Image (cartoon, rainbow, N blue to C red; front, side, top):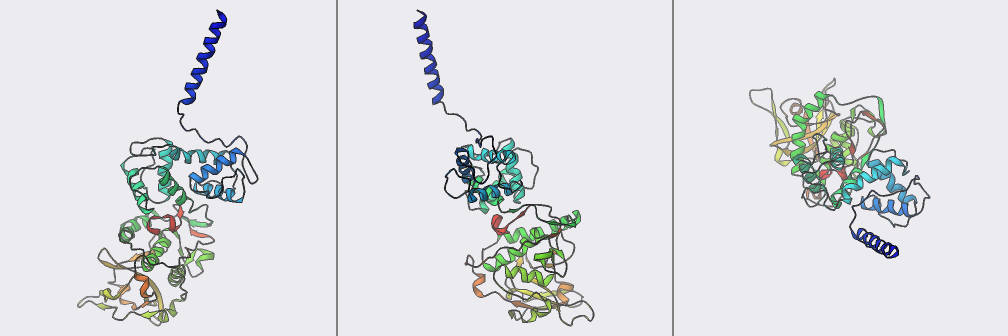
Length: 409
């Protein structure tokens, strides 16, 4: 009798185990083992690491279970995106960050309106770094987080459903990999002042937002967009030395720098801009009758990327070109130029009023770009922006490369 009962109990246990085995289990955090993973590591844990990095968009090579140079580079890119030490070592902090990054991707439903928790908190932090989210990081997926996700999806050509599933998560990780981590900053560098940031938000930002909204992808507008990128992410301080090595910039170095990104070699000496490109006829500043103010004439003849030249102000004044600027186009009903100027978070700002000095000191406008530069969607060379060896203004936000930003700037 006892033997029969034991057999019955054994049979029930087997059935129970089989039933448990058939129940779908929730996805668990990846197991990268107890040991640190680094160059030369092998085995199932490396295979899992490669699979996860592939799903996150950082690894695009063979999944072979061997921690080689390509796996190392993928780990470094991931660490960079998370603000971790970029040593390529998969230790506890990197393992934790990997599992946190995988959480949304492992959720078949993704993150959406109403969601809460650490995954939403991380999402908000990521969107903040990329400039799409500017509200409180509270771990709640509300309407503002949804709008930020939609804006990001739109910038990446994804379905704008506000759902953070695998494709959107991968795009986010790729964008985060483009962040410049731990830039070298001068010991004397200071953060932009609150007053300058407020001034930028009131004056420049509406112009930038409007320009971005009407961006057509042409070389001319992309060049203007790069000038905007330097204004927002270059953290340039005014000075007469080379930006690449010092972090300082002046007006002619700025124009030369922007053009060089697209393969155009232009002098960095303002006094020589009178021979750059060709003159745009019919553009000048005229004094308004009965006043001391000026207005810009011939705006309809201008094109984005044109270069404005101005007289020098130092004594003896008006003897040579002393200032240059890049024309942006008519934005919010006004012609705008971007150039070095005071009172902004960085040395770069936008001018849309030619009533005073910017009218009275105008010499002429020069055009460098060919006709093809004004055709939307044309192919062109982009060598990418120059990052200085050291920053003279302390960045107050993550520095994100243009290719990972909405419309490139």
